[in-house]
Image (cartoon, rainbow, N blue to C red):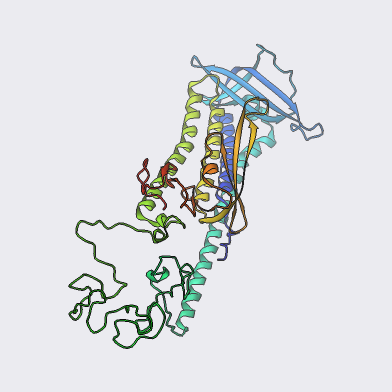
Length: 479
């Protein structure tokens, strides 16, 4: 199959999030500075953290150093803290333990958590260039935001237009196409009627037992392929029973069949072998995977079972819920901590919370994207273990177990496990063929006939091989 080409017009979601966050933060910085300059109230604060690092000696004015400043001030008997990082030529002496320095601070009287040193938020001390920058910056950010959003929409429109053009072309070509009769094989015909082995499309004989594939032509013997006499109940060449009973007689017991019947009134055998046998009273209708006919050798079809699909949907909802928790907890928790903790400035807490939330969101979206990748198969080509240190300066060690798989597409995949959590390392052997399910994040072994255990593909619980359901989550095992 041809690989799906990625659209070059669409901007990746992680990059969009980073661009949006940067533009919104720049807009907030400029608007807060202008607000403090117009409506801010001045107070004498105390600087207790100061650092000035030389970046480039030959830089333009106010660009040679990066200054870090931590300060606090009081309003209404309550202490408020702030922290800023800015470019400047300022080179005051560093503050040693216990030393402080007084400096004018501007803040909003109705919300003192928004504050800055007066030199960064006072029109009289900022300079004309800085004032013009802060006035134009929000407009520039909004304009850039509009360009990014429009570019992303245009990419989607181009993609949709290509799809519409392709559909239109298919529809037009279909109107001029000469009707063709295509012979298809039924689902039952894809398996050998003698041994149950799965047959490749178009196969005439079973690759496992050599039996001729069962065809849909009732005038041809399904066993030897010889042409049948009209109305014959048995093949004149090999003696095999015909697909449909002849002369109104049951092919199993020979009883006479009334016209139009689908099952024998004497023994219950279907008149047409392709008709499924009726379920006996008290017998539950259960899903039997087609691969089950070959025992424990072969990949299971349980992945498409309704129970497994429901479990996958449940896991997906749980994962999305966890993603939003990881995003909103730091976004809400850090600002609250900034309000309650005197040593944690509110402005700094907001920035830290937003940054961690964006990182969590990017990692979660990447995980969801990986789960949408197609199922792949491969062969275990190597296994090895390695002793590693917990930290660079630590003497504590752990053992890392690595299982290397080469996919059918030629790519290299690794399963890395640590210490006692070496389940796949012990379960898989070199030469084993495996299948990986991205939506589940688990592996299935092709040949399970020599195993005593089997892992649940839903919860990864180890189960005895004779179990049909997982003893922990009660989901069907891939057998």
